[in-house]
Length: 185
Image (cartoon, rainbow, N blue to C red; front, side, top):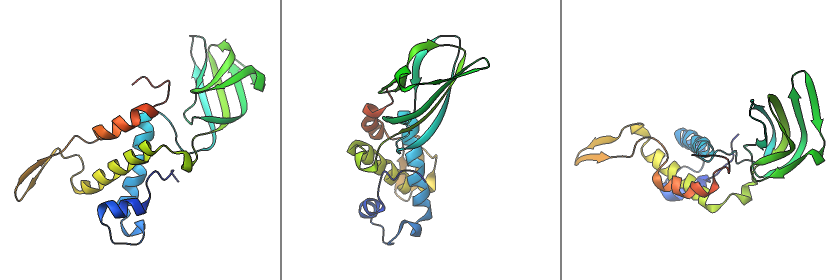
């Protein structure tokens, strides 16, 4: 199950739908879930607060920054660093929780870092700009579901030009301030 960024009640009101449940519109449920994935991919974050396990590989360049996708990090259960054949379980004093994930007390290289943690946002804490972006994108994709990928559509009165398949410019603008701090683009 993915986090619900936009309620069916809001979609129903905006789109003028008549069914009492979203199951009356199977494609709408698929679109709503896919919009969540598209938003998470764009901002480089997992939004739903949940227990997670992330495995990060550090190459030859030493680093102490461990980027985690579900931010803010609420709690860290364990941090295990494997270098060669040696596993080291870090104590809570060996790392700090940061806005991007965790920062190890010392740099590591050629290592596998496994972090078991809880992170993400409670549904009630989702910023309104993210829910608005989800509403706009879901409505747009629902209205264009019969022409997926088309950049122009012929109608009885001429043709309609559409943006390329992807997030709308306004949706991206709303989401830009919520990007993961270590997401470069």
